[in-house]
Length: 110
Image 1 (cartoon, rainbow, N blue to C red):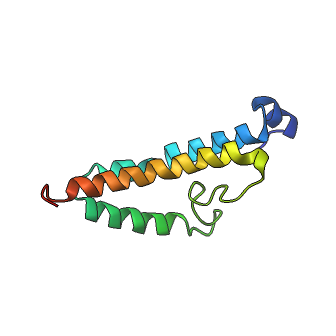
Image 2 (image 1 turned 60 degrees about the vertical axis):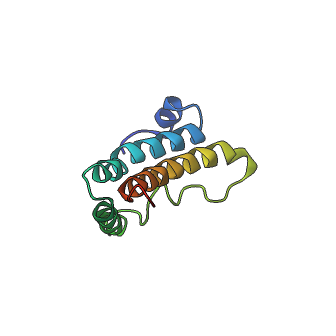
């Protein structure tokens, strides 16, 4: 990245803050496509597109494998629980978007 460890530490109060910022950036950039695709119309088609695009994105050879948010802090030490809760809230927000789109696509009498 071209910055010194001292500069990196000076920019963030803690490693947890740095990680939280990285998660938020990832969600706002890579993860933003999920909400955009769900707004396009047919929820089932949108979900299929999300799954295909996610599989392609998260298996690129030039990047770490997997989704940073969905695999973030699944288990942790007690002192890292605030970051674990934050990453869980990001996962929940994405799942809520998907649930909402699928629920809206159901006929009203179901």
